[in-house]
Image (tube, rainbow, N blue to C red; front, top):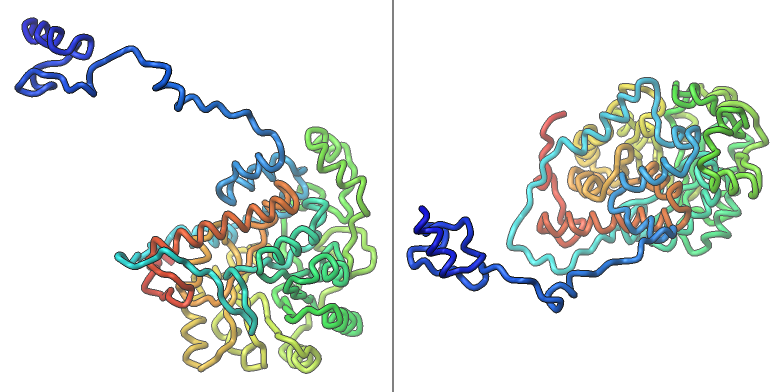
Length: 439
């Protein structure tokens, strides 16, 4: 052994320390690349690329590579009550966890040796093109999450070439959103009230403002038990209690924006003070039936979509009553806990409507947190998807720029997933590309 070490030192210098004949080959010669030497500055210079730390909003957002990253930024920058209003679900939040888990419990089945040098993510939904197969879902009280609210969402959607849906419980009016995003494709989401005249007023305003699609939500006969909101004392408008003041003390930017902009109200409703649940229970109609859907079909001349479908039977029924599309949704897990998971329901609904020779659009929301989730949904039969929390995390992380970043992340995810699956266009996706590992 000592003889071998000596031979290594003689033949390889410092590089031979600790080496044996077996390490350097039978010839006993150490390759030049393995000989140790004092590094030269010319070799080190290209490696020493120290960047100035970035603390700007743009730098912060650019470091986010996933929607989960945006969620972490949002959580740091947003007071607990509005963050939990966005992030939480009903009761024990079982539905929300299951919806997200459903996208994890799949296996992609890629094809190889396909030319995927060009991937086209464009599609058509409800008679018009969309640059991406995803739109922004209706979200209530959006300016509470971040002061730019619906304005940021609608403008980002317009810039991305995708639809934006304004909620009845939005904090920007139908007219203001249309003015903020005049070249965007704007949809309006409707909750039918017990006062049908007020519902009709909103319908007429949506039509006058150029909205081409009316999305009626049907899963809110009563409010879900959103326990995070109850525990946080979440009210409209947010109350300044000792707890909220302390929580805001290390999130000054949110409170500065909140206090220096127009007070938050439901722009489509009269001023209201109380909890969201109280508002839903007092204003929304628990007697809603398919007859009301017929009335809407006669009243609204554009595309009509029903949101909140959770069974195959109801999907068929609403299509029979003349709707142009359905949204498989359990309200983001915010209404009935242990509700059906839309992603699990998707293949059955797709098969049923195909059997009926229906051309109604199948749209899916709930649980989407990546572009891969969207591609999986499209492969299993969805025509289009909607995101709620995913874009709201971006909004809370950085306003309009944060929403832009969320859409950029999803677009990059989708393009990469498509290429790795070996497909160039949305129309090439089939159920063969996805296998559900468990239901």
